[in-house]
Length: 114
Length: 111
View (cartoon, chains in turn red, blue):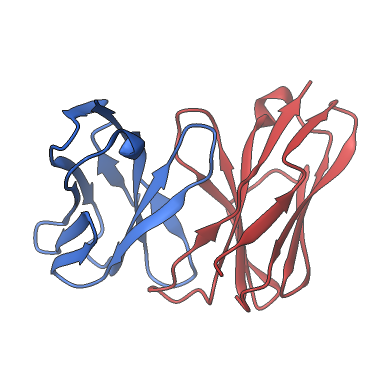
């Protein structure tokens, strides 16, 4: 089973709202990732969690706040977003973060910021 | 700047033909290479991973890696309309899980 689940599937929020995206995997993976993907572009890495600790932050604005409550869950808290933050947000997981670890993607949350 | 380059396409092939997708990367130290398929509006799905020079086959898909030329390719034999998607080449640079994607090649298989 290589399933990563994400909720919600779609989200519309205003620039003053606070919302959260959720990601879950039950494959025993110890690394989890957030990516942002704009239309017709490849996914761009935002954050990496390894063994529940933040290991990579790709200079993401502070209006995006990741959280890893346990090894199976990953959240992305959103606050005061801008319309240009509208995108597909993808969660991924892998067994670890060594070079040959394959990343498996969830279905994504499509976010629209008004 | 670590780079992964792909032809954006679109690449159009007739049904039953071989589709050839190409990718080059900039860092000679790269060790792990992946091909993902992404249908419109969906998330990336892993097709193949390859770590050693040479060919790796899985059903109708063959990945080819040439580290000396910093080149990785994906061949799709007996292409089907259901193969129509964007194919993303991705490379992991060193440890840490940082996956760098190419821009993707859009493949269209015509019946």
